[in-house]
Image 1: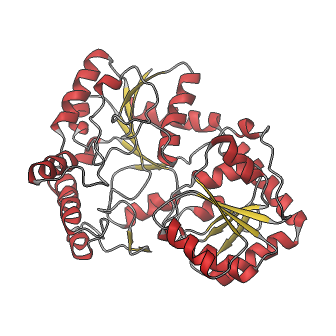
Image 2: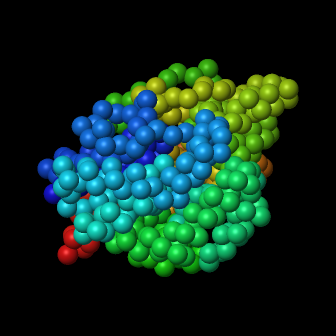
Image 3: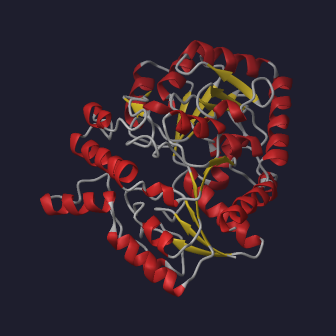
Length: 412
């Protein structure tokens, strides 16, 4: 089977890209051919169809200065005729039996759905966020969950300036949502949506999105994590956070928990983000000596830090989907202490694969950390349970068989 994979980034940028590439890998291991369509970027992985990719654009900078540049970028976000043309040329040279979409918004745009529909190519789309019902992807305003766009009230995005605090960007995002959902009903061209978490599936339905959604969690090959050795630490008790350093990830709650617990526990913070400098300042000014910032890490170096810890902390205060960070921790045999929000409790089963706490509650988080570290047998048992969970429930072969069932349904 020839499968067209579409995602706006073609390098390992985050969880959605990990799923994008790993899905293609598992399909290739079963004899299927992968065809890629994405956007040019300096960090892109090598690809034989890259000459068809969309031109690079960074929507987070002011590089497109001037009225004409801003209008051109806005047009690409809302509906890209260039994406349709490039995809059409790709399809002429590399025919596909089915298209599997991931994150396509803004840099590519859902305009490509009309081209796929015209060619009668079945389409599935994996959902990695809340873009189907939220102009800003995340259902967040000022770092807190927001459901103001309930059942198509997209004008709320303009009132709240929820897209990066910018009125102009919020207007464009609201117009985009209105055009795609109310005028064009463009997502009706997707045959089946795949939701990695039950929470995301239910939340989209609750918010008024009535297209067909099936649940298929992310997967991991736990066997590839067997030979990772943990680093020796200066303290016996250490916990790790790895991910983006931003408000909705609950970093401030994590720092407050570290202050409450004191020097007997080392908190290792791995990652980068706009909050890093302010958090480092807070830690220094308040004399919090048990917090260590390790910066951005990936691959084996990251996994060694996780393996050398007693637990991974996920203090999110946003509607997480099916976090790869939890799944990777489990594959390394480490329990997770996670906030009871979004899809986290679907993975972090309390007292089985980890412990859960109330989002934003530093007292509850610190109590759960102390409880786990006070009982080494509990930590080891939950780590083993977590490892068995990914081996049994989130293994590549199980994911592949279920994905092929979905593919067969849309092709038939």
